[in-house]
Amino acid sequence: MNNSTDKSSNFIEFETPIDVKDLFKIIFEKKIPIFIFSLLLSIISVFYALSLTDYFESESLMSVRDINKNRSMTNFGGAASLLGIDISKSGENKTMQAIELIKSRKFMKHLLTFDKVLPSIMAAKSFDKETKSIIFDYNLYDSDKNEWKNDDFASLSKPSYLDAHGVFIDDLLTISLDKNTGFIKLNIKHVSPIFARDFLSLIIDESNNILRQKDLIESEQAIKYLKTEIAKTSLIDIRDSINNLIEAQLEIQMMSNINEDYVLIIIDPPYIPEKSLGNSKLLIVIFSFIFGLLISSLYFLTRYLYEKKFL
Image 1: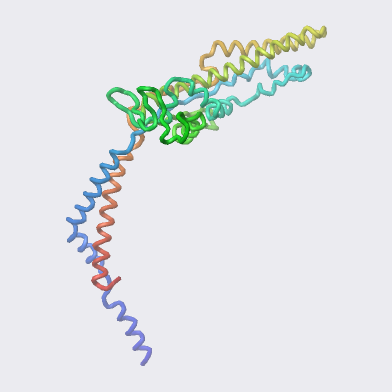
Image 2: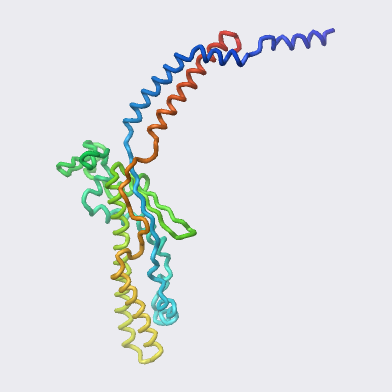
């Protein structure tokens, strides 16, 4: 008898279950305030989205010319070692060398010697499409007087190359390597589509120039040393080997002088992007409207459940 009483009492808890139809009915009845709230939230998000800065991204695809892979260099490595010459760099990975150069602080310091690069990295605020020029943050940099301000840089009136390098690596540059093909892809993001293209071109050109000058200096030093060594020996085999090493160094100099794209060979050149990155502004507005629908619907449903003592 007690068991039957207990069972009946258990069923009392479910005498007034939640009807899903009632929930949809509440949402339908409150559709006007729900829509108005969602619309207001969307309007607010429009103003927020319009206040966001547009960014543009230029891209370039490159292959790498391995200048040091010359038969004359590899065939006479033994002779070079006998002379005390280290030609291990002949097998150096030019791809990684180029990538690490671009990412280096020293390279950034070099890039900052070019006009307007530093303010374009550190103080660019937006882009004027009519004049096609960068609008700088006046609190940081006065473009008319070419003067830096102290407001955000403590006692420094001008940001250092280390400051610029941090922004360059974290915000502007994206570099990727396809290990299957060996192709390098470089991307530069900036508020100015023109600067994005020009800066990317500058990076590629100066990378080639620096690597060219490096190999030229090393080959000139090697030739000078080899000519000294050849004068010290009368052995024909050694003299022939040294002459071959000199020929290999001359080949490096020839390649350095005839190839404008010395290491980085441009397959797809940098370009001026026509559209800003993604549709983030539109997505913000759409998400805000959907979020408004969910929040307002949840509010009315919660109030209904509370009045019905379900909560």
